[in-house]
Image (cartoon, rainbow, N blue to C red; front, side, top):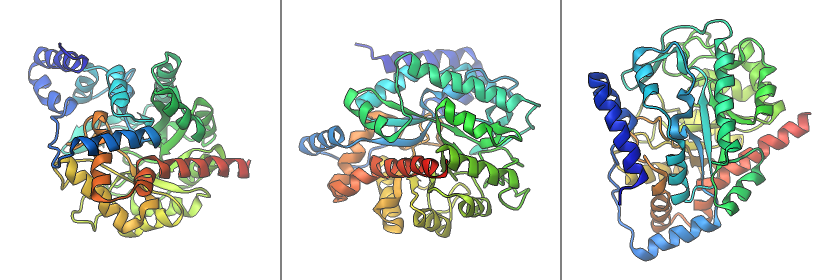
Length: 389
């Protein structure tokens, strides 16, 4: 029998062939090859992992399932235009979530996608937004995300309790998120509008060099840290109960934001530079420690930077626990938009849990990392909004 996944991938391969050289460039980026596992689980160990996932919700705090964010983007560079032409595939990824027993996943829009281009290992901004463009694109993206829930593909997650409801129902919960707060333009009050739309997490800055909110870690600084507008946006996030994600921010921007926020902050998809390898997308031990000291977490990121297997990712989780403690580590896969991922399908979630339990993480610690720490920070953020209302 031919699986739905094979049909989807076969269709993408056909599109790639039809697009010639452009397709040959894009196809490996769109359909990453499965990474080696690097460990073995026996039948009992796998059964234990599956039973554990039945009892404890697994949550991915940063992802782009099915690449919803490409739908409706205009005025793209040729590389991202091609990326868009491969389309979206949310139903297939949701089936993977079910098979992997994911309780909830952050479905992240990308605020600055129309102004980016693919360069080297990542993305760079190549132009500024046209007047009104950022807000218009945000509106398209939130409507696309809302449609996934309205059509019954996922369960919308607005409060922590919704995750448990989704877990019981056996249908993945969708936590609406957005990378890059630049969609607000010059109006921080739009954060409140986004919260009413269902947005529950915002990555403050993304790849837009010279973002009006603050400096990004992958380009030379422009502002010297968080701007006044960025500070106002952080304050509005607190008032609106939206989680603050400091991934992609420079150290100065992130520390400035930590000085403003009244709720815990997180870095959903990164690693610590001192733990075996350095990279511009990783953060310092000092910043990771500051995030943890305020009750937040660092999301273990399965990018193929210094690791080449799923076992390497479990090593990465272990190193974060050693550095920050079990209360301050979560999962942030960047699924469907990651760089050389070593975890490229949600179907592998039981393998990760099985490996963690086999290594002796313990059930309490494992439950915290795969979802409990996210739920704690989510709850604290929502409570802080009530306190400041």
